Length: 463
Image 1 (cartoon, one colour):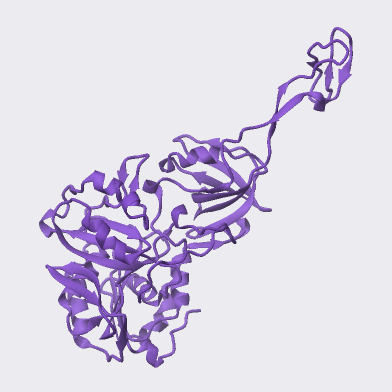
Image 2 (tube, helix red, strand yellow):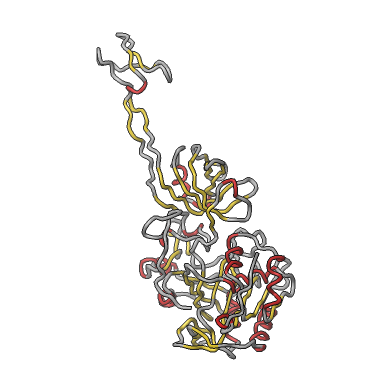
């Protein structure tokens, strides 16, 4: 059951704008739609960072990263801070707002931008736009990031919003309301730079050496460059307006990081607060409770040696009383080598998304918290009477010295521990194969708690 937050004064000091599903696989980006609203509407102040909220990555009808946007407007109070640049003009936001009334000019601007820029011709797109002073409960966000939310669950909320638009279907309203309802616990930031419009759809020009240097020059950033596969993860592959995006934990570092990248002309840039890299899509579950279209953390024991399937995918069974196959797909590259080193009896926590057919957990991370000691025989025992090497007389029969007939038990052989090739710890796929929401090991806590991670201290906090 979803609840609308009570209309207390603290929820009436900001107008929330939620936007979702305005893009398609062929064009546009919902973040760009948000920047255009910021560019055109000047009647109120931007409050806090614009918000990019990733929702359940397993939704079958998602476009690309299943991201929804939230902008907040009001009467700015406090010292403004820099969040972007559009058309050569500095974009600023305020840390808080005074009371604000419903604003038809804001609504009309948002409606005009969405109707102008959304890909209404795409048969799968269902753009949604919501403007409201009343913020839905965070429970809606948590449902939308970890599960599938039905329209029936969200429909009652529409009677409490100021304006909404759904020109082709209601699906985009779910994401719009979910983005508004996000109340950050953990959070990261992303600076997105956009291309000049005449360059949309053409090959992007970004100097690779500069991207390669980001991790070293700006340690608070993450998922910049895949050195093993020579891949610039900050540069999208789609024909959308985004030129590049740099993610990190410290907002103030990101524009400085962007300024070090030599690239084609930038039309605009905006700094977003986001839930990317937080693992908030993952819920601890037992194997018997797994179902399609969700993501989970499952703890159990490896019950058989991993096997390699056609195409290079690596699979092993994980048992916690019930059994599920965990799969490291070929795009995870070197991560599969870690998986192949597992043995029956190892204790692991598997992080990943549930696939229905065949039923499996597609790995996003692997926490190996207990490695079973494996011993291997390196030599038969020597006879205590004559010193010759004894011969095996079968798996349970032990050993016998042929010349003199002396016998020895099976455990008389010489054994040594097997070099496992891995250590206990948390392992992840290379940067190129990571999901937006997956928390990189770089962000994992310094002490292991709970599911293998603790709490990250965000280094900069603004609204």
